[in-house]
Amino acid sequence: VEGSMTIRAAQLALLCWLLPCCCSAFKLSSRVSPPQLSSQVSEVNTALPTTLQKKASISVAGATALVAGTTVGAGILALPAKTIEAGFGPSAVALVVAWAYMAASALLIAEVNVNTLCALGRTSVSIKSMAGQTIGETGSQVASVAYAFIHYALLVAYMLEGGKLLGELVPPLASAVTGVPDASIFAAIGGGALLLGSTAQVDKANSALFVGVIGAFFAIVGVGASKISLSYLAHATPSAALPAVPVMVLSFTFHNVVPTIAYQLGCDIQKIRTAILAGSAIPLLMFLLWDAVVLGSVPLEVAQSALQAGSVFDPLEAVRAGGDSLGQTVRVFSLLAICTSFIGFCYGLVDFYADLLDLDNRLEAEARTAAASTSTAMATSSSPSQPSMLTSEPGDEEGDPYAEEEIERPLPWKAALYALALLPPLCVANVDPSLFFTALDKAGTFGILTLFGIIPCLMAWSQRYGEDAELIVQPALPGGKLTLGAMIATAGGIIALEVARL
Image (tube, rainbow, N blue to C red; front, side, top):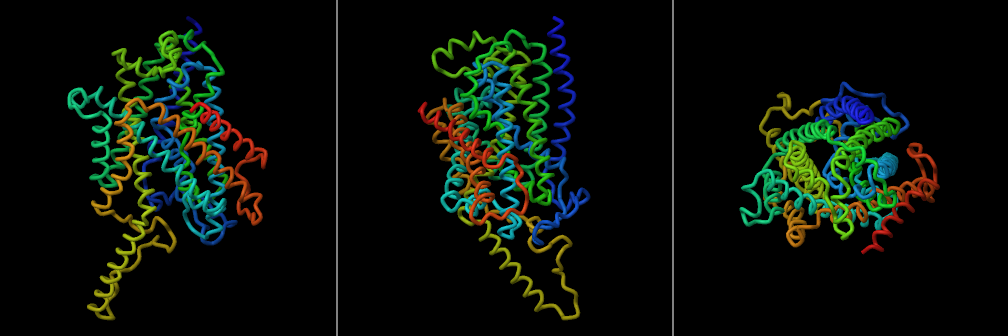
């Protein structure tokens, strides 16, 4: 009893520490334009070329929050199912190792990003552009394929699990009542909202959903702490932790925002390192708490029959089926986490296709042509003594990616982009509704470990040790060739093991 009280007291103390951190993270991670953050600036990094010498437009705390908010998503839902066989102890160790690996690869992306910005004299570059600049056109194409694969695989998973959870929470929308597959209902509601809603509306909705995710998470920890059995947590099978690694690295994915925070922090590699390490450490603590609550609430005996039969046992489904307050809270948390992740990855894939079609550049060119025509007409109709009404606003500096207003895509184009993003994964989801865990596994193994594991190492290797190596910033990750080689070998080994299991 005393041991149980000690464990719960420690959990309560950690919970009290995490709550303000996450609340602060939410407040700071709301989308605001850099001019609104101009009061939180740092000294200009004079070691950079003139085009990149700028004050930070976001604080380190804000960048930390952006990393943390991006990391917490639907990947957390698959952790208990993948770690129950290994047990809490071995899976906790594996989670820490996965966090360290993904944080290290994010540091490599930051290093390559700043060096590539300097080499190209640009203010922003994508991972695809970084790969093309460092490891050639083939690397750029592999990065593009991996990016699309990750997004499609995860959208399959989100549609399947989101549809099932939506049917559980709102029975009239369940497929048993409507006759329509759960995944189709979820995709129609989610995709329709993103298609018809403005960016501002979606941002506000996403912020509200994220508040719900954080609130539901702490409610789960608070309620679930009283249900934890130490005997359930004592089980340990270390060899079973390895198959859970793909889902773990998937859960620690935030690398798509690293180029953003690199620019917003003024390309200051020390501040970028702090934001990455601190921002990813908060989700690590949350994942450990989550795993402890779920695995400590479900006896292993319940899962053993399914595990022996070679099928996947989902502890969350068992908790939800309990019908108590914990089960209902887990259900709400799961759906909210799915929704926030669905928004992010759907936006990512839509933007990917817009970039592939060069849509935004064409729309921007059309807008500039129209503006120039309007300006010429106004100049012709006004007298020379009259001041121009088309003066530039402060902060509209040339080359500032935040100075120009976002071009709104016409509805027909938006519809086409969302069809490209959502219809292929929806077809896959409807063909096999049992693909949730498989989709997450494959996304983590073949997508994440390629795009955010092997490729960052190859890019850093090329910049550091290639024939034309010229570093503007010092390496963000120590260890030299040994570290890079070990990371490549680790990712390659896990991919090879997964291929052998096919």
